[in-house]
Length: 182
Image 1 (cartoon, rainbow, N blue to C red):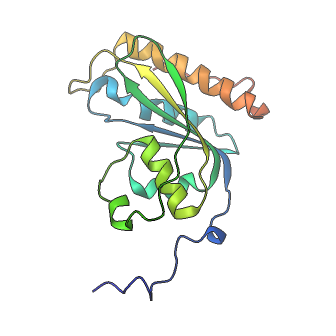
Image 2 (cartoon, rainbow, N blue to C red):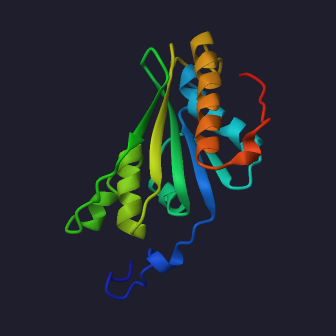
């Protein structure tokens, strides 16, 4: 039996949250579904850059446990596949979740979209990072682990966009960073 909310300690207090890094990159998608793996692939390349103020995560889907990571950073870039023709970066401006909403509704789903995850982070930690969604155009998300040429080009452009973003937000260590293409 779970303790009542009246006796449970507040594990999500604002004082318990400290910033651990400036930038977080979360690439999400299914690594077994062809081009859908572009998000995790880009996140793994960014992790290989080994930048001190940057954390990068490759995940299958956005889940509520990522709120802890979001609460520890100033900026987040979500990276995902999309059906568009060109790469697109969109700033996400979360709306604060109404305080009267029952807590059980916040955890109703096992996977979230970036906006819902940011709203949940705000609700739990009383803060959220500035956020962007970087969408990479793809051709096919069929079973398999090969990327299409369109996805390869999108990954290259996404990595350059992330590099520009990090330089813009004061990551001078990025100059000279290189990566091997997908």
